Image (cartoon, helix red, strand yellow):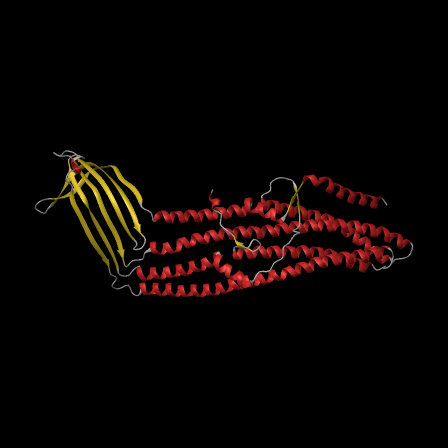
Length: 493
C-alpha cells in the first residue's frame, strides 16, 4: 500500500511540476526554430563566412582587371666597391666606384583580358652622385612612357578567368542559399528528435498511470479468483517497465533538448516545448517542373559547367605552354638628362624601343605532346563524369518529388491510424476494466499499437517537412509562395 501511495504521489508531482513550470517554458514552432537557426546557428555563420570568402575572391578578380597605380622607388642605393672598367684600348682594369643613387617610377598599368597583354603609362626620375669627380651629380628623367607587353601564342589566363570567375561567384550565391536550406533540413531533424522525445515522455507517464490503475484492479480481481496469477504478474511487470520507461524518457528528453538548443545556439536555461506543425497546406509538385527549376537555379548545374570549362582550359594550356611562343615589347616616350632636376625636364628627347622575342622548341622528346594527350584524356573523363552526374542529379530530383507527393497520403494514413489506435485502446481498456475481456495480451497489444501509431504519425510528419525542404534546396524554389528563393546581399554587412 505504501509503495502504491508513493507511486501515485510521484505521478501527481510530475504533472504538478509540469503545470507549474509552464510559465518558464519557451514554445517553438518548426517555422520559428528554422528562423532562429538560419540567423544564429553555427551552420548559418559558416555559410555566411564561406560566401564572404567567395565574394572577396570575386572582388579581387574584378579589381585585377581594373587599372592599377603603383610607385616603385629606391631611396637610396649606396655603392663603394671595385668594379671592372673597359679602357679605350680594349683592355679592362679595376677602378674604385663610390656613388649614391636614387630612383622613383610611377606607373599606371592595365591588363588586356582579351589578348592577355599589359599596357602601361609611366613616369620616372633617377639620380646619381659620383663622389670624387668633376661633375658628380646627374639626373635622368622619363616624363612619360607608354609601353605594351604582349605574349603571342601563349596561354591567356585572363581570358579563361573572365569565363570561370563570374560563374564561380554566381555558384557561390546559389550555394549559400542551398546551405541555408540545408540548415532548415538539419533543424527539422533536431526539431522532430526533440518532439519525439517529448512524445515519448508523455507516453511513458500515461502508461505509468494506466498500468498503475490496471495493476491495482488486477490485484483485486486476483484475490477474487477472476484472473490467473500469470496475468497479475504480467501487469506487475508492465508497471515496473513503465517506471523504468519514465526515467529513460526523462534522460532522452534532456539529451534531445541539449542537442536542439546547442544547434540553435540558445544559451539560456529555459526549457523548450515544441508545438507540432498542425495547419498543413497539402499540394503536389510536378516532377518535370522541379527538374526544370533545378536546371535553372541549382549551383550543381553551374558546377557542371565550371568543370567542363576548367577541363577545356587545361587542354588549351597544354597546347600553348612549352611550344612556339613569342613576346612583343614596345615602349615610346620621352627622356632627358641634366645636372639638375628642373633641367632634366627641359627639351626631352624621343625614346622608342621595340623587341620581339621567340621561343621555339626543337626537340623535347614528346613532352609537350604527352601533356596535351593527358589533358585531352582528362577532359573526356570530365565530360563523361558530368554527363552521368547530370543524369543522377535530375533523377534524384524526380524521385524526391515523387516521394514528397506520396508522403501527403502517408501522413493522412498515419494520422488516421493514430486516431483509430487510440479509440481501439480505449475500447479494449474499457472492456478490460468492466471484465468483458480477461486476457492481458489484448490490452498489451492495444497499448503497443497506440504508442507506435502516435510515433509513426510524427515520423511521417518529419518525413513530409524534410522532403519539402530537400526539394527547396535542390530547386531553390518556394513552392508554397510559388516564387524562387532570392539571394540577399545584406549578408555582407
